[in-house]
Amino acid sequence: MRTALGRLLRLADCTVLCFASGEEFLASLGARVPDCALLDIHMPGLSGLQVLQRLQASGTRLPVVLITANDSAELAQQGRALGAVGVLLKPFSAEAMLAAIDAAIGGQRPG
Image 1 (cartoon, helix red, strand yellow):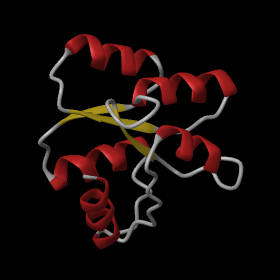
Image 2 (cartoon, rainbow, N blue to C red; image 1 turned 90 degrees about the horizontal axis):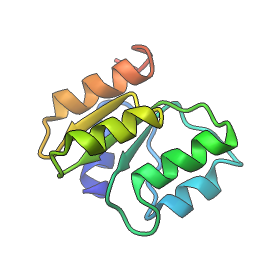
Image 3 (cartoon, one colour; image 1 turned 180 degrees about the vertical axis):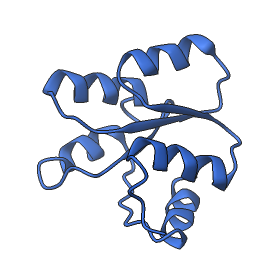
Image 4 (spheres, rainbow, N blue to C red; image 1 turned 180 degrees about the horizontal axis):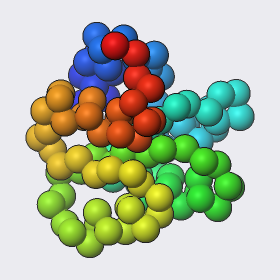
């Protein structure tokens, strides 16, 4: 999923960095804070919600779009309460993902 999403975003002229885990992503933030992050609620190591909690606790301002296969209103509500600007339910279309990213970054995506 990570590889496919990265490829799709690159085709849409986005600069993409992919990480194997939430811990790896958080460790990268010292070097550069991205314009937006796509976080799976269920990923190796820290969950997307745990990553959001750590971002919030550190004061890092970063638009986050959560993705999940779990159609749970409670999970979506938790994500939004932690600062997620969108939640995409798998499977989602490329158009839906790009629209969510555009909304998260205020329409600043190239193209």
